[in-house]
Length: 379
Ligand code: ADP
Ligand code: RBF
Ligand code: MG
Image (cartoon, rainbow, N blue to C red; front, side, top):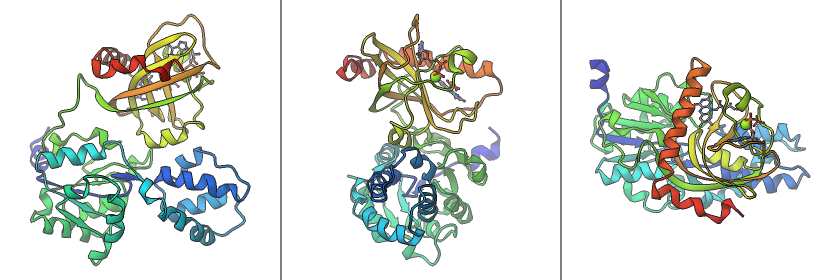
């Protein structure tokens, strides 16, 4: 690290954006649309969710009206959609790593501000549904409390002022491009956590671009490090998915020597939206065969630049035959790293084998091994 690098990175407080950074509205949007589209005799395709993630409400409405050929205008669609959305605000989930980050900073006495482009009242009603959040912020500031919203610097300047901090000592965490611009214009350091995939190139003014809040390393910014990593793995709230094994891209075993048993992306689209791309691990059950350790990637496989987000589970066992069509059950218990690109197939394969070793070792820890006996895996 150069000297200027080490000097520029120290922060003493954190300014957080809300929508798309700490909370995720897209799951709720999908639930509403599923019911709404029935009215027009259309069936909601879960993959549409992936398409509208991170779009502005107007862009998303236009996408849906067009893709489904709805016999109404975008304005009419919005006037019907918005009341349905308001009524579901309590169902908006926090993003993976959001509560962990807030609690960690609070616990170490790092001052925090919530600085959002939505109105103060709107912010308050959204965070009311997340227990313990409001108390963590010394300052909460909305669009209606300053002259100009993001990308103007006003919101962050005001937040720094109310924290009695110089903007240069503040670290902004933002998912949107206007938000990153606002932070830079205010003179803060900015970590971008884009909510849209493959958009890194739009965030070049940010000091760092990370894939999800799971990848934040506070010590890089002079803040206290997380202490919950165990043997190169991060425990997560376990999630369960299952279904019949389908044909994938046909390159796992052929190109990499690493077979991955694919599930239908359509059936678990809401989980795909909810979980950041990256490398995870856990347990896999094939009810007629047994329970096995498993390491998987979730995402677009940058090396192959896939168009669709998929889950690629590699069962850590030598099978003598394929098991297409069989029911596969997964419990995902931990996170290893973000997806990466590689300059050669050999380096990708070497990294995946390293992931396998990390997963294999970690799954023997009681904290992870206790899920092996879960009946979900065996039906
Ligand atoms: P596809 O692109 O169709 O997923 P792969 O080359 O990735 O093809 O191979 C995956 C298939 O290989 C699985 O669907 C399964 O039937 C079989 N298979 C054999 N051993 C394993 C393993 N250890 N982990 C995952 N799948 C395996
Ligand atoms: N693909 C990538 O492009 N980047 C990765 O970092 C990456 N990590 C992986 C980790 C594991 C444990 C597994 C099983 C796969 C990973 N892959 C990654 C996906 C790999 O490219 C994928 O298996 C093939 O695309 C098969 O379709
Ligand atoms: Mg596969």
